[in-house]
Length: 159
Image (cartoon, rainbow, N blue to C red; front, side, top):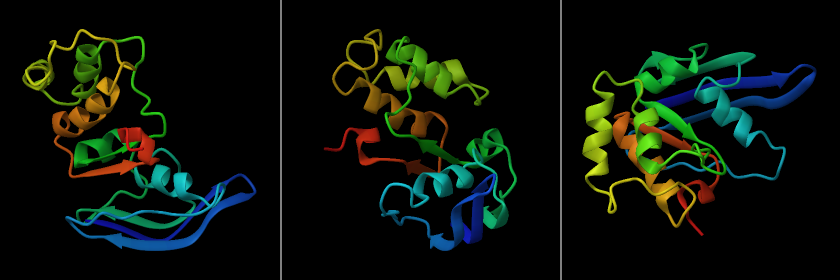
């Protein structure tokens, strides 16, 4: 499903990731562990197209996504849930779901279907209780994702 081969990521003269290779097969859960500054976030960001790859290659579901823009990676079925969830805190849950389904042709229908699972119907602000964690998980469903990269366990409310 996800193949990272000999990837290097640099920020100017700083080498953040050096020659990392890994394979995550369909149905597997993988974790990148290491101290601050080890390159975990840089590698995940490169995998979803947020950070350029200096050398090496990344493929997802057999397709080369090494230099693909983030939008193309999301449309292929993979996205990142960064630390702090980065939902739109000034929007309601319903509004966040509409934004999360934005790349789908039937975005309003997708958001409406997902909102049926919420009680009350999505008008509570994110950041209250576990509403924003629910938004993150519903984005996975709305985008019909095959893979979700989670930067920190707290991104899904895991404590």
